[in-house]
Image 1 (cartoon, one colour):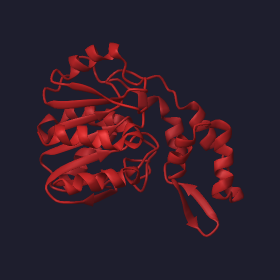
Image 2 (cartoon, rainbow, N blue to C red):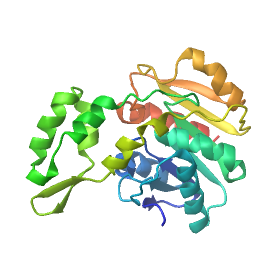
Image 3 (cartoon, rainbow, N blue to C red):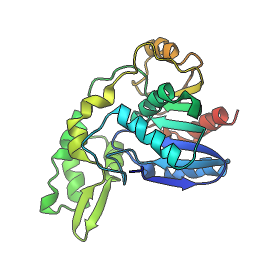
Length: 255
């Protein structure tokens, strides 16, 4: 089954891949800006996220295959990709397995290294919500607040709420499987794997996902990598400083 996507604009295909617990809707505003600049934008929902297929299986090999199948189905022979966090990891794996399909790659605030599971509080908060008692949106937020003090993170997660029917909320992501398979999110790129194409790594200057000591690993896998900081931003750099994010990505993609 194909992935759900929001497609807009015409021109060169640009795939946008969200992070863990995100979805294509998070990229609505930015997607429109890329579409205005001559790209056919495909903002995707990856498996177990958004409106895409729910599956008991969840790992990078499968998500790379989903991406490949999506490109084949939409006759996309050569694409640019912007991937944030988990989406950046997916696109790095895709670059290693299908380099011939990739023109330019933007990886937002994630490196090729292994990351220890660090979403425990978020998952605990999400799993604390019992939808069988038909909570309201404010009930859900109240529960999340006990586990997730950061307002921005809560708002980001709340975007996944939808009304299944009148009076019945649910999350769009497959929380059960994502909780069970959380270890798979941190997987490192295989040692010795190299992609020789154009890659831009962007990191939030207040984020610790890409440290200076990670530059060597990045260049081992991506010899042509350019690494830049987005000022005044943390891990959600595209949301926290969209102006600079769009400027940097467009400068790279249209060069």
